[in-house]
Image (cartoon, rainbow, N blue to C red):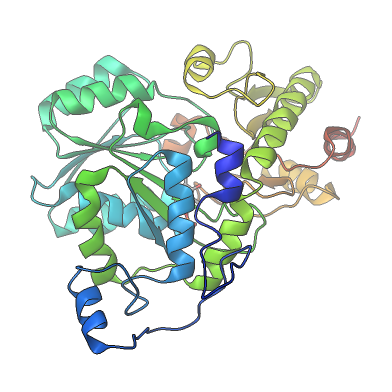
Length: 398
Ligand SMILES: *Cc1c(COP(=O)(O)O)cnc(C)c1O
């Protein structure tokens, strides 16, 4: 079945008594029981499918997990209370029974760096960073560290670099490391990393999957070999997604393919417009003709339903000669584009990386990463492109 169809049907419409609800209800119950105690005994003993206690499983959350597993072509899915919880669980699953060592991409979501350096390293995990867009350097780092886990993001933020995920998978597997991928920016609409060699894929469901700015959540998917460790970690650490958030996320995912395709179209239109604007020094968008990873994105990203090329819904850009105060004033002039620190929602959003996502990085290091005070990151919504452009135009002036 195609993604557009799976998004609407997978996980839903299970029979309740003699009727079928068209959407899975929100089950607030924390525990479940049976006519006969022997059945609960069998459920707790994993001999029978069923519900017992909501940290072990919940019908609403199960439905979302089935939906995401279908979209990602995965055997197992686990929904979590946030994207960070999903990343933490995925790394713990990758490290189970193995040497405590991770080689990670050198550009990552800020809190992910903090998870690696402030939480995992002090507990004895060796952490090393390298550039997955430089395959030779990355392979040398993996060969040297012989890690149990390699971790990257499908698209780097805010420079929108796209590593050759299939090649990084080969490197990871050559040295027997589990390959964990944060696919928040790509979603299953652009990429299904399990099919390209990833072992575990994580999402901040807060972003594109939910897509409406109203639910914090995460989800990870994997192949059969991780079922047992995810089962144990999921019920032991208690990072569960609540049933209400699961319901909202599932509802959001039904329109995910439509939204992401429109967001990608808007990004391509707005990036082209920004490139031609006299006040814009530079744009960062994988679909830009001179973007260093355009060919990789073209090769790895799925096409839209009409066969059109998709390059993601995110665009970063530098405002020529602007300091922090100029950029803040520009942001304050925006009337439509929301100045909020998230991405992937139906409404367009703009963020100043130096102030928000990359705030905790030393200014010198930030500069080395190319993140200046004049850099802005735009997450395109599903509005009409001309309205987004008109708002940016009036805010840029001239
Ligand atoms: C937002 C984000 C996260 C963290 O997700 P939360 O749901 O906020 O915990 C992780 N990775 C990426 C790429 C993100 O954009």
